[in-house]
Image 1 (cartoon, rainbow, N blue to C red):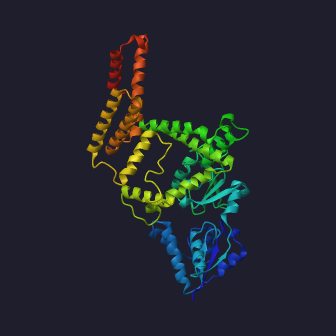
Image 2 (image 1 turned 135 degrees about the vertical axis):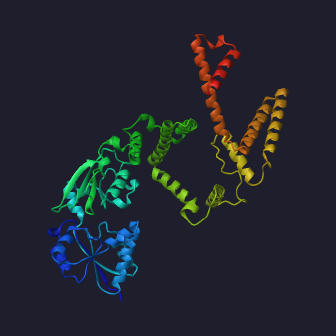
Image 3 (image 1 turned 180 degrees about the horizontal axis):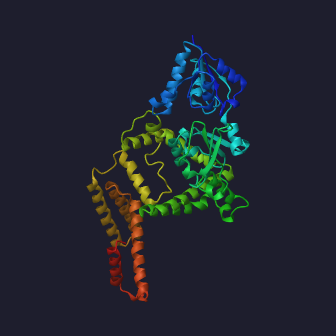
Amino acid sequence: MTHKIEIIGLGAGDLDQLPLGVYKKLTQALSLTARTLSHPVIDELKAEGVKFASFDNIYEAHDRFEDVYKEIVDTLVKQAKENHVTYVVPGHPLVAEQTVQMLLELQREGQADVSIIGGQSFLDDLFTAVEIDPIEGFQLVDGTNLHQDELQLTQHVIIGQVYDSFIASEVKLTLMERYPDEYPVTIVTAAGSSRQQIKTVPLFELDHELELSNLTSLYVPPIKEENQLYGEFFKLRQIIAKLRSPEGCPWDREQTHDSLKRYLIEEVYELLEAIDNDDIDHMTEELGDVLLQVMLHSQIGEDSGYFTIQDVIYRITEKMVRRHPHVFSDVTADSPEEVVNNWQAIKQQEKGQTSEESSILSNIGKGQPALIQALEIQKKAAKVGFDWDDRSGAWDKLEEEWQEFQDEVANGDKEASLKEFGDILFALVNVSRFHDIFPEEALIMANQKFMKRFSYIEKKVKESGQSFEAFKLTELDQFWNEAKKQGL
């Protein structure tokens, strides 16, 4: 037989705030077990002769709160097999009490019999203490399990369980990822009681010499300044929607998916340049420009009624989970090669294609630069064995294509020369593949190197006060070599 576990909330303040019915329950109970003795109501009841057992010792025995809560719940369930159990917790049992939620889950599974008797939540008194109206929107979050991505910066945020300097420090560091360091936050202890303390400090001072307890909460007001929200995704989306609106920008309003294609390509190449130059500031800027293109295309899709940015994010999130079963499921992949093989197998399964139904070279990106497309074609052919045994075969083929090109040039056949030159480029890509060189990246680097050295030549010509025509090629080549020596 399982006896009832009766859960009583002690409220958020002192004994004067306790309802009479709850007071009678506590004073008449045969035995009381508290999650923690650290509460003003318990201090006052003990002075009246009420005795409490507690789980305070369990906190010292574990490093993780999850383990503490599990042992408390296991102990209560075990005790309930012998006798009626009265379990007392701070505040209201259904507000920020993980052990109560775990007991209720066991009750839903038929493993426990639980009843709950109120107890004032700290929220009402906290709203009064900081003088806010919750109808404006608020979040109540756990300071021991705070994640920056879950914070809603435009709402009132109340953080419970900020009961020591370590938790306060962790909360501070998490908040500083989203809020300015100087942002004012309010520490409220024992809200509504005779011991109430309220102190507003800059965020960066949150954990500096403050007295904290299990009755301490933190209030973070909503951000009102627009520029402090510029790092938030929702604000970027609002701005893009405004630009595309009738009251927005004429240029942005007239853009289409087709008209934006060239800008997307340009922004991607500018990002590649920033990566090649290891320029972090420029990389941040160019990644933003690429994101802008994604947002514009998504807004155009939303304006047309076809898709939204949520659809885009949902598709890529679903794909990442689906194609990484070794991370999100029980598939094993111990090497990058296994990951790639799994990815390709899942991709083919998604497309619903078999080797009889589709070409090996299907789905090669037709909009890709020719060098990247050539590399992808060769890699797909190589996967089924259509490849040289080693790099020497690729080099031999390059020499063969070079000779055929020279022959056609000597014959004066322009069309044949064009085709043979294409074969040279294709063969060069093959060589790059065998040497693990990304040809598009190599050519971009060569272009950038040429531009830097040619800019040096231009600079030297301008310094001379003469025109390019006044210099022989050998003289210009000398400037080129100077640039080369300087590492340009």
